[in-house]
Length: 629
Image (cartoon, rainbow, N blue to C red):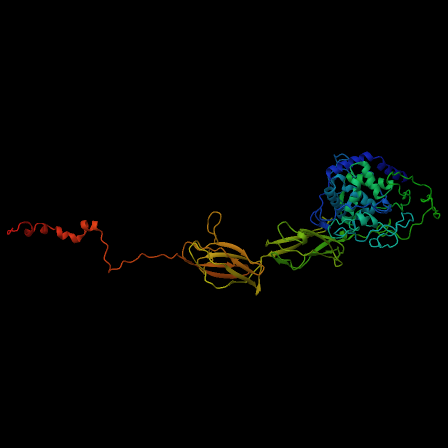
C-alpha cells in the first residue's frame, strides 16, 4: 500500500506540463463541459454581479495562508480517471452524467464552483480561474462540503469546523473573531466548505448569493471568496508557476499542492453531479492517516520557495520547533477521543441524507387562485415523505413556474428552492399574479433526484371583477354631428367596495335594447385606416374609477347608447344624442309692398300690355280716318 501511495503522489510531481496544458485548455473553454451557472436565484443564486464580488485591499490570514495551514484530506483520486472516448486526456470535454463515485460532485456544490468561475471570469478575466481548481481544493479541504450536506441555499446543514489551531500539531493562531464564526474564544478554527480561518474570511469574505450575509458556511459565498483569493496579486492561473503559488497560498505544504493538483487534473478529465448529501466522503486526513498509510507531514514550508519535506518512517517525528522541546510521543500516537464533528471517522455509519430518504412529494391542498396583479392568498407547498409516509425534514425542493404565465415569485423569479421543515413541508414564497388571466401548473422537484416524480400544483389567475358600474353625474350628453361630447366618469364596485383594476368594455350601440355595435353612431375617434372606432377597452384606476374621453358625434342625427360592461356582471348605459346643425330658412315677401318691376321684361312679355297692341286698337276708325277731318 505504501508503494502504491508513493506512486500516486509522484503522479502529481511529474505531471506539471500536463497540468499547465490542462489549465490553459480549461481557461480557453471556460472549463470542460462547463454547465452554465444558474441566473434565476436557484439555490440562493443571483445574477452575476448582484452579489459581493469586490476584491479586498488586504492580505490573507495569519501565517500567510487562507486556512492557517489547517489539516486537510489526503485521499487521492483513482489511478484511472474518467475518460470520454475519442478525446485527448488534456482536452476540454463534455460533462458525463455517470461514472466513478470519486468523480461525482454534489449538485449544489458544483453549481457554486461554476457560479464562482463565471463571476470571477467577468470581473477578472485575466486570472483564468477554472471551476475544477475550486473543486480540487473543496475536495481536499472538506470532501465537497461533507459530501454535499447543504440546504437549498448552499449553507451547510451543520457547521464545518476544523480543529482548534492551538499549536499542538498545528499552527498556533489565537482567537481573532471573539468566537463569532467558530464558537472558540481561545483559538481560531478553519471554517466552512473551503476552510477559511476567521482572520482570512474577515478580509476576503464574499456575499455571492446576494442574501446580505458573508457566510463562510455557505458554499456560494465560500467558493467565490476562494476564487478571488487564488486570483490575488494579478495571478494568471493558466501559468503553472502562478497556479502553484495560488495553491500554496491556500496551504503552505507541497504535499497539499500535489494532492490538489491530482484532484484538479482528475476533475479536468470529467465530472458528474450527484444528489446533495450523497457525495463520496474522504477517509485520510493529514493529521490522522488511516492505519497502514504513511504519515503526511503537516509542517508548512515557506510560500516563497516551497520544498517537500521527506516522509518520516521512524515512529517518533522530530520536533518542528528547535527552540522548544515537546514531550516525547509514543511510537503509536493515541487517537484523540473526540473526532472532528464535520468529518466523520472511518467506519462511522453515515446517516442517509434527506435527499435520498424522500420517496414522494405530496402536493398541498390549498386552492391557488388570485386575480390579475394581486398576490395569491395561499402559498404553493408540498410535503416530502419517505416510503412509509413519514415526513422528511431538510429536503431541498425546487418550485418552477411554466413559461406560459407571467406570475412571478419575489424579485421576479420563475424558480425558487426551499427546504422542508420538521413537518416535511416545503412552502414556496408568495406568488404574485401578472396581467395574464389563465390557469397554469407549478412543478415541484427534488434537485438531483430526476427519477422522483414531480408534484404538480394547479394555479389560476382570474380577471378582476365588478358587479356594479355607475355613472358619476347626470348631465345630458348631446352634441351636434362631428362635435365632441363631455367626458363621462364611471365608478366600479364589487360587493359594495370600490373595484380598482377592472377591465371595462365600452361599445356604442343604437339603443338600450341592443348590445351590437352601431354603424352610424358616435365614435372614440378613428383608427390608422380612418375607420371610426366604436368599441374600446378601458380599466378602472386605483380608486375604482374610469373616464371615457374623446367621444365624437357621428354624421347621423339620432339617439344612441354608450354601453359599459365589466366581468362580474357590472353594466352601465349612458344616453348619447346626436343633433343636426341648425339652419336659417329663406325670407317670405310682404304682400303690401310694391313688386319690383324689371322694365325690359315688362315691355316685351307682360300680359298687361297686350290689349294696346290688339288689332282693334291699331285699326280704330277714329284714329285713322275721321270723316270730319
